[in-house]
Amino acid sequence: MGRDGFLSMSGFVRSATAALAATILMPVPASAMPTEAKIDAYVQPYAASKNFAGSIVIEKNGRIVYAKNFGFADAARRIPNSSRTRYHVASLSGQFTMAVAMRLIELGKLRPDMKVSEILPWYPNGDKIEIRHLLTETSGLPDINALPDYIEVLKHHQTARSLVIADKPLRFEPGSRYAGEDHSAYNLLAFIIETVTGRSFADAVRQYVFVPAGMRNSGIDDDYGHGRENQALGYMPVGISGLEPGPPLKWSAKTGNGSAFATAGDEVRWVDAFFGDRIVSAKSRARMLDASQRHAGYGWFKTKSKRFGQNIYYLNGRSPGFASFLVHMPTEDLTVVVLSNIYSSVTTRMGFDLAAIVLGKPYKPMQVKLRKLTPAETRGVAGRFKFGPDFYVPNAKVALEVEKNDLFLRWPDGSRSPMLPMGHDRFRDRTYWVTMELVRGEGGMVRTIRYGRFTGARQLVK
Image 1: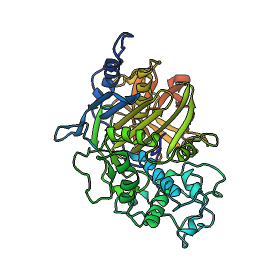
Image 2 (image 1 turned 135 degrees about the vertical axis):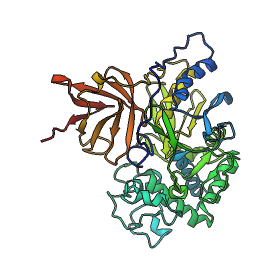
Image 3 (image 1 turned 180 degrees about the horizontal axis):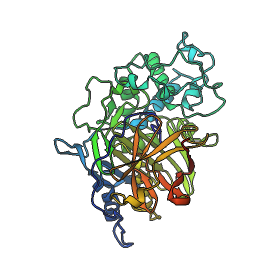
Image 4 (image 1 turned 90 degrees about the horizontal axis):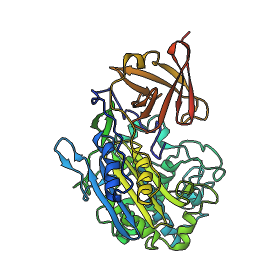
């Protein structure tokens, strides 16, 4: 579901608002249309339907081939997003944390096999966890985003030290498996970086990443207001077409894993610097991008893409009010950055499709109908459904709810995803951009729902 995805936050969608009149947003670009026009035609429906607002920058062979901005950085004041707009980049922040750690390894201040206890003698299980376990997200630490009090953590100023989990048992033996624990591992790395360098985490990232990469419009949000100028406000989806301001939070609560902000142009500069040996050496980069053991770690997803027929390196993320995505394809020397100040997983789909447009490969335009459902369509839909142990949250029970002829999927934490109609009994989750299909039984009652690759069965009320 993405780096800051399923149920790691609550309250990100609320009650419905009135929907737009029935309109099919399905641009069909002509094959002869110039690439820039194709991209404009592709993005326009996402922006017009308020599923995307932000900045897109695409670089090919060292040249910017597309750079445009959509929607508002501040909707109430009608301030448009621009090339100077700074977005919170969510989990893309972890790439900077990893780069600093690798640079410290190159300088001999850290070692991959160094025990955490060698730096923090007081840390429980520090004699079991090595730096490389944090880098590869195999430390066994519990995920801070999944803790019951995480919402409270977000409400108060934090430090790298206060985010370190020292009172919970490990979930498994360090190094034994990958568990996508980027939040807690990166929090701990941020504090280790402060301890080793004697600098604040923000200063260390500035010294080792932002300055050498030429990222003059990027920084770490520590709640003290640095870099607030030109910073976008975040928004959350409401109903099938509305938006509301994102919930207030202290970004210091995401130190190390989600506290960075940047412009889209600076994200391209970061990729250029990282792959151009200006941040870490080619040897260190090869270690970070080695996909032979697992597809994730060191701040990157890395895979041999069937769609693109080559190795690709990418990352996506979401934090309240924001979503981000970047992908780099060395064989094509192509980088795509999509930053948004609307909380939605659509940026990932958009980013890959934009890469396909530039490379002349197939892609699908947005296919949803922003309309009210008919009484016949809503009949037999409402109810509770249970998914299996392989679901994002094992054995989760979710509810389909109909409100003013709009359909919502209510998650176990109480949040709701607006469902956008795509066709008969087919919907798109506006928050996570996952396809959902309704499977009806006798009498037209929905018996199961197919959410992506998962199936949930109706729970009968006794």
